[in-house]
Length: 253
Image (cartoon, rainbow, N blue to C red; front, side):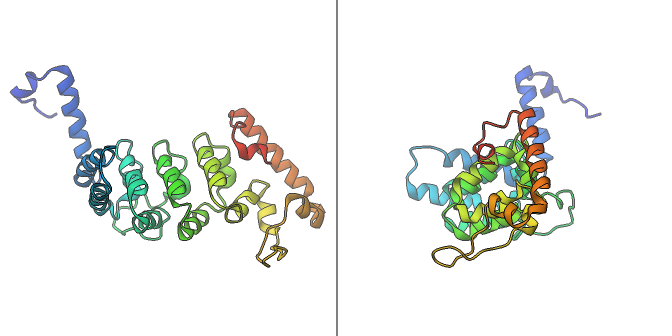
C-alpha cells in the first residue's frame, strides 16, 4: 500500500479527490499525449478564436493524436479531442482520422487489447459514438470519407439499428449520406438474405447502378418473402422493446 505523505493530510477532501483522479489518469494509455491534447481542445473550443488560431491549434492537436485516435476515442474525457480534429480540422486532417478509425491508417504496436475494436464497436460505446457522429457530419462532403465509413459498417446494420447507442449513428448516417451510398446498408435491415441476393440493376437515367426495392426483390425472389418478413418482424419487435421506434429509419421499413 502506498504511504501517505504529510502533504496529503493537509489536503481538503475535494483536493484529495482531484489528486487521486489525476494519478489514475496518469497511468492510462497515451496519458502523455492526452493531457496536452485536452488543453489544446479547451483552447480550440473558444468561440472568439479567429480562423488562423483554430487552424494552428487543430494542427497541433492532430499531430498529438496521430496513431492514437482509436484508443483516445474510447476515453470518456478525451473523446472530445478526436471530435475537435473532425470538427475544426481541414479536409486532409478529417480524412486521416477517418482512415485511422476505419482501420486503414493506424500505427501498429504490440498491444493487442484493441485489435478487435472496429468502427462498428465504436458506434456502441457511449463516448466513442460521438466521434462517429462527428465523422458522419463533417465527412459527408468528402467522397472518400463516405466510402470508408460505409465499407466499415457493412454487415453491422442489424445489430446497430437495435442498439440503444448505435441507433443514433444509424439515424444520422441514413439522414446525412447520399441515398445511393447508404442503399447497401439499408438492405441489411431487411435481412442477410436480402443483402446477399439483391442484384444490381442498371436502370438509372445515367445508367448508374441502382439497388432494387423491397417489392422488386420479393417479386424476383418469392421464396425469400417469408424469411424477409420474419426478419423485419423480429427487428421491429426489438425496436419496440427498446423504445427505438422514434428513429426515422424504423418508420421507413
